Structure formats: C-alpha cells, structure tokens
Image (cartoon, rainbow, N blue to C red; front, top):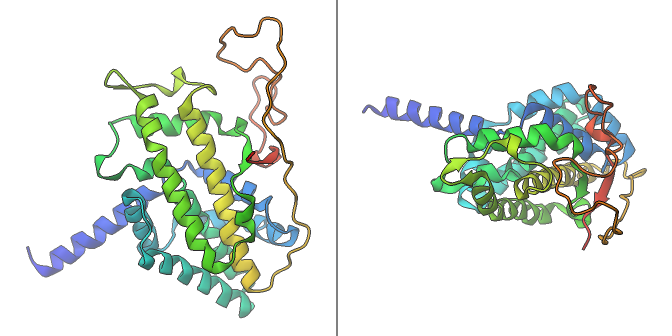
Length: 293
C-alpha cells in the first residue's frame, strides 16, 4: 500500500471514530446544555442560551483531533496528557477570543465543549475492545430517549463548580472512570439469555435506566464545570448563580396497596410531565438536586 493511501486511510479512520463518539441523541445534547446553563451565573447562561443553535452545530463539529482523542482514551479508560492538553488548548482559544472581544465567536466555541463532558459521561463509549452485542447500543439510547424528560437532574458533585483550571483534568478523568464502571451493569441488564433486551421491557426500576440517568447528570455537571473554568479565566460575572435544592434519601411511609409491581410510578406524574397525549415539558423545567452524600 502506498504511503498516500495509508495516510488517507488513517485520516478516514480518525474521522469515523470522531463521528462515532457523539452518540447521545441530538435532543439530549440540547437538554444537557440547557440544564448546564442552570448551574451558571445568570449572565453567562443568557449569553449561551441566546446562541443555542450555533452552540449545538459547533458541538457536532468538534475538532476531529480532539473528538478522536477523547474516543480513543475513553475506550481505554484513561485520558492521556496529550488529550488533556487538547482540551486545555480549546479553553485557551475560548479565553483568547473573549479577551479580543470576539464575544459571540468565543461563546459558541465555549458552548461547543459540551461535547467533551457528554462524550466522557457516556458509558457506551467506554466499552473498550470488547465492544457491545449488536443491537445493544440502539436499545440503550432508545431507553434513554423514551425516559430522559422524566429523569431528575442531579448535581453530580457540587465541588465541580468551584474547580480551578489545573483541577479540571481530574474531573474529566472521573467522568471516564465512572462511565467505565457502569459498563458491567449495562451488559448484565441489557443482555438476557444471549439476546439484547428491548427497551420497551424496561422502566424506571431497571438498573439500566438508573445508569442512563446518572450518565446524563454527569454530563450536565461536567459541562457546567468546563464552562465555568473558562469563564473565570476571563473574569466573567459570577453573580446570580442558582442554588440547588438539597435533599436527603428517606423511606417513604407505607401506603395501602403498596408492594404490587407496576410498570408506572404510583405517585402523581412529575411536575414537568405533559398532560395525556401532549409532549413532555422542556428539560430545563425539571428540579435540580444535588446528589445525597
């Protein structure tokens, strides 16, 4: 094979790997950005919200070298220093644009970094060389798409919103590690008797449902953390940040008829649920809660 052909094949492989890395449904990527904005100072949240369409387009076109590096490292379970340097380089570009008063361009580039946290929070991208049985990825994302509007948004780690830039690499590695830890649960729950389980057979009681919910909250927290690191570097406004409502787990009181399995929650529908026959409410209407210790 000629050197030119080998080079072309290498480039095509990198592009395919980068494209494969963005596996979240497109509406989930929008929801991750919206929920991450709820963790930001009011001024930054408004600036990014006003450019939502441009941000999503830029996220889908994340630099191929960064996207492919994230995908390779995620599959192996550890981020290389070179990959973290690429992330840091993207933040450098954001800071430079904002300092040069190219505000809109800088904000769109900042918003596009939602892809970094989203990709690293996705357990399906952490399968490694073993991969997944045919059809499992389809059923997992179908399960998520059918339920994510009802999933609570949990602040994965309140300390993430106060990280310095040099601490960001540790947070990104933690996203990779926790995603990898959940791959075993997905294999156990989505494969039965050698066959992939249909998402229609699963509901909120399934560990696979819980994995997808936790992955979503990781992506939201990680996105907000990346955005805030860059925003603090340019001394952006830090006021009017919303505070999460802290809750602690507790046993529910006994109720008549409790204990009978049902495919639907016994309680009333969540506040963001739509009337029968209507579309679900926007993800940003959901309550935001920190994870209980």
